[in-house]
Image (cartoon, rainbow, N blue to C red; front, side, top):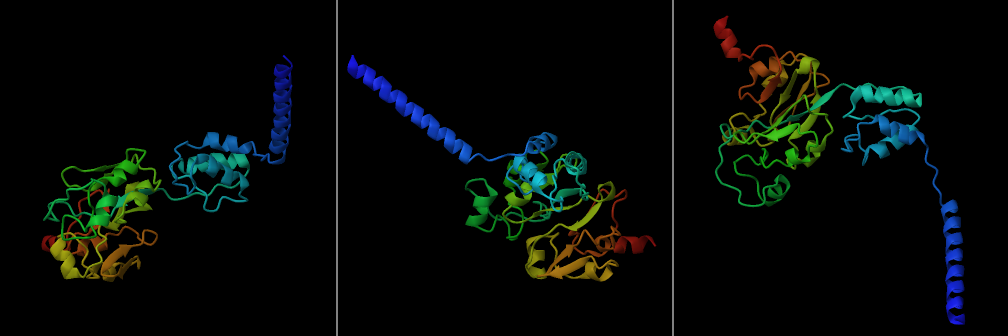
Length: 284
């Protein structure tokens, strides 16, 4: 009986000492968390997509509370309206940003870019990219296995089963950048959505010499610089035989679209279909 009593007393003492130690440690290492973080998190869309540059909405909320000014802090999913609400909650000034949308810089469909072999491995772009150059002669083009589609939490990008090129639903796209990070070929980028959704961009990433690109894909950029010469806004640069349109400088005049000999420059959501220069001259 004495042995049982001694055991109980011993366990009680050990438990009490452990409780005191835990209490002291909890007090010593307690981290104060601003209650405003919870308030800001409630305003955010809870997408936890990482588009803001933080691991999740709570981390972004904490950054907003701690920041003196928002600067580069922006939630692409919630957009300007959400940032306005966060600013009002914290008594700070909201930073307005131009809406953006993901664009796929490859138009190498099966029609324009013939397949010469078939990949018989795991159907993931990242894996295929590390194993070989692709099923066509263009080693820069889309592999079509849909890593971008899998990465999108908003169902905004789908691989067309016929063309095998991803297509973006701009009404669903939040410009979170998940598809951009998922593409091993760096074919997807975020660009200004533009007035009425109109935008102009080079739908190609091939940096091979022009004659090599042309053999691999009918609609690839050959770096001829015709677009650069006609651009009145100095918005186009040619680097490594590839044109790029700066959407900050582009005024959507579409002069580049008219002169491009390979149709590598895409114009989106314009009211009338584009006309090639020779067609316009024939009409005139």
